[in-house]
Length: 383
Image (spheres, rainbow, N blue to C red):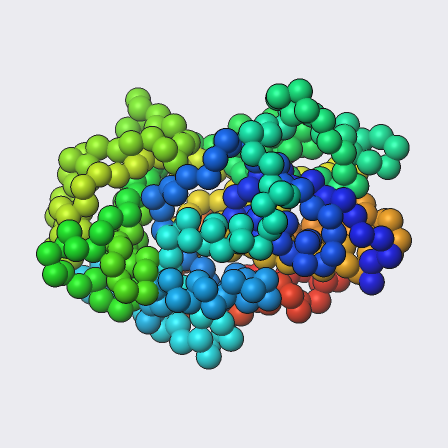
């Protein structure tokens, strides 16, 4: 067991950062979360929590409140874009992998995780601009001129991570010419049309759309797409950019009436570029370590971006709990050795966008993984 509780600075108060803060605080460490935004906003997005991430959320203590709020799909349902033919269906009873599969509003998950971190341990308007390691500690500098220090810094600041730039250097994102539209809107706008009991992915020739409810009452609908983008136009990698609903509907002209009914009911949407990055050569430098999208950004096609960040949080907390004395750097190397093989595989499969498209490929390695109990000295389960 750890012999010294550490002061930990978590950079970023997104899903991964709050999960890390909660897991490390639960283990007794002194955590402070630094977030560059001035406030938390209810971003219009859904999120899927698979059994692998729900096992972590269960130990953290937010499974039950999420169950009350979220939609529990009967299955992963995959259908052909125009005929509606089912190409693969994976029922997801809780007994299959030992935890539920839930779909929810991203803000509800964020609120649940934020409730685990004392308010006075989250500092807003703190944009990191520098890190300096000396005397066994890491010194942090912020854009407003403030300073802080910590025994360990966890970079959970997303795809545009400042911590990653400091640790690894600049890495240009890869634009493969695809964009995503997304929207959350009241199910009442559907005019009585029922989406059914499952989360459904409609597979087109060069595009897809995923549709599901986000609440237990089925009162809210969410969809997210992936479509090719013209080479002469580059959409920003921003979750706040507005999309053109007419343009979106045109992109799915000819799709099954169930898809068109959702898009016709949708009042507006957001649009962002799907950018990718290659797996990093390393995740840490001294007493600074990366987590979640900062370490392994991935496309949304497997619904594992937030899930793998939540897994990271549990494993990092476990590694710190078992470190001998103050050998934090050895702990970080162990964390990376366990996690990197799994996340690199998920990145690759998600990029290819082949997950559960058809056939009977094994899903146990992904959804059956338990971050709290997996052997730390072996690579995490991966395909």
